[in-house]
Length: 236
Image (cartoon, rainbow, N blue to C red):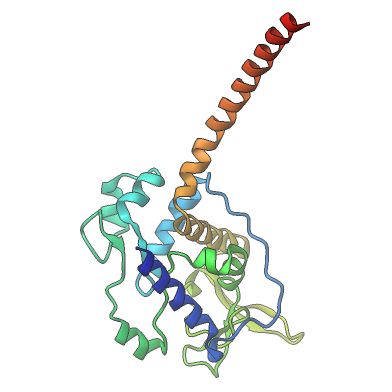
């Protein structure tokens, strides 16, 4: 397991260090607040991920049955609506695309996204997914403000539409999509929320357990204060 995790991190480091996909233009990233308590958001994010990301990017450290349990979905729902590369609920979220084909089509093998939220940060992911713009010089016809010469196409173009540089050299909507700007921000937010979850799924359990730990400590504090008063009463 440790070897697999190391391999994934190395793949991410390699991908983002390539000069043709060099660091962003220096534009400040937008802030995004992760909310792992929002199960509805996580469920929507899972749907977006399996429909638009999982065809190229795997999340091999997450299993479908674990996701179903954590996000409050039945295994039948996941089997019938969120699984396209396997029919075994206990399988990890991998892709059917061969690495050599990915290299040929995109110039680089798309990285596993299991730890992308931890490697890049949720603010960066939120900004990246909202700032693809038209660029005729690129093979896919688009570029990205936060990852110059990105090899990834704008897979959510139907929802957002397309951005383009206007007369003031700012990015603006050049072609509208199915969603308004506000709706698209929420759409991307759900996806980023899900990516944050798969980066550290055990955090859900820690959050659930945390309130009980705090309650126990508060109860123990009351008992401790009462014992202290009873003990020191006899001393004085």
